[in-house]
Length: 456
Image 1 (cartoon, one colour):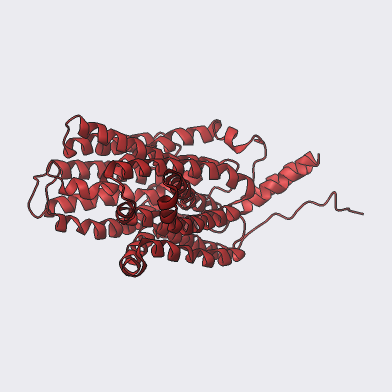
Image 2 (cartoon, rainbow, N blue to C red):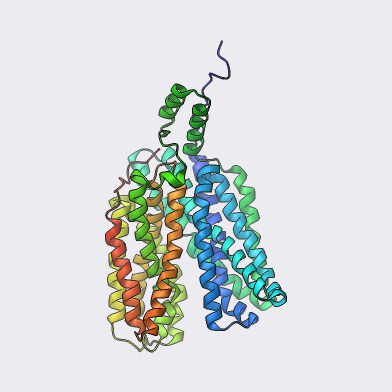
């Protein structure tokens, strides 16, 4: 008679309906996480004015917030590899919501507690880094879910495009943040916008009840449980049937620095890190470069078109590179995109300055299209580059590296301007060159056939 001690667990599977539901929930989770993440930047001028901060004080606080964001984004990876992707999504969304609410009360605390209140703000906005980390968790989760239902080549070749729709939550969330500022700021100032920003998380937390955990995560954990009971032969048989690897049983934080994980960590990671130099220079500081006298010198009113262009370009760029990566391989699509981005931005910087800026805006739009768009392919490619054991940890480290890149790029731009360089020269050195180098380095990562879904 067979007893429960010799019964093997069932291999977990998911249906197409499960995956479609997970895709929609992941999209809205990312959209609402972006809302809070972007909202702080949108409202920073009003926030700093209320606090009476000077420009250097504001910049210093933003730097500390960025450092905290990177640390939180890094820390969540090993946690997700331990507790699961579903719980990781819930933690990220809940963390962003809590940070949004606490940001609303940070102002009064700063007024009462002074420097202690500022420390509280930095800690709160660092917790908001969970919202930024959402994209790495999504990429890990959906990579594993897609591989279980989009299995034949005709289905597998659409995975990148489907994921790019999820990643497009960034421009959607950015538009929602801008719209909320427009509607809510006149009514209740910046605190009201942060309070309202916490409510969408309730929808995600409720919807998460219908999320299924990643089959790879569940099956590997079941196989390891058999090993822990001393049932080695059964564990290996179950792992083989489920298609998961149980040979590497070190902690994910150790395993990520070995074998194929190390290669991905180096070349995908450094590429991601350097690409954020371009994001800092041409996205965050883009309007300054366009309007500065030693930049492109165009009218501020013309430069405001960038707010529309950046979001429209990001959305279209995501879809194109998601589709393009499905056809020529994500690694190749990323490299081609970033090369074209570097060329477009270099041409924009070297083009004649002043006037209405029509040529400048055209080249700037092309640069953004090829800089931002590849991130849809990059995040999915990152998930494909790691085995299930280190997937969340590796993705989180690489994702956090983007924030480190933004910090160092800001330091570099500041140093160049202080030394007497123009905005044109600084943008060329700290924006164009790193993006081009990132394109070359990504080619040294292992190529992944987009028609074959990785199941381990």
